[in-house]
Image (cartoon, rainbow, N blue to C red; front, side, top):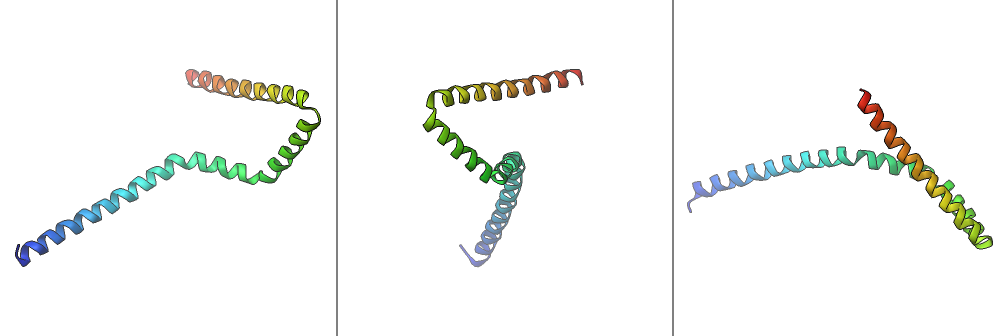
Length: 99
């Protein structure tokens, strides 16, 4: 392999590396766009971190003092949250059908 061939091969490799960098940048942008809702949700949760700690502490104290009623209460809360979520999904589906 002579000097000219090596220079040509080097240019080909540099072009390939540049294209790979461009592809990586585009993939990173797509990744950030795809995960943006998750990131926003996580930011909202971290804003309320102290309140969640306090509620967790209160739930733990109640769970120690009255474990049976606390379990029933947690079950009712979970059922209520699931019903609210199902209602929101059903509302979105109905709203999209009308549009």
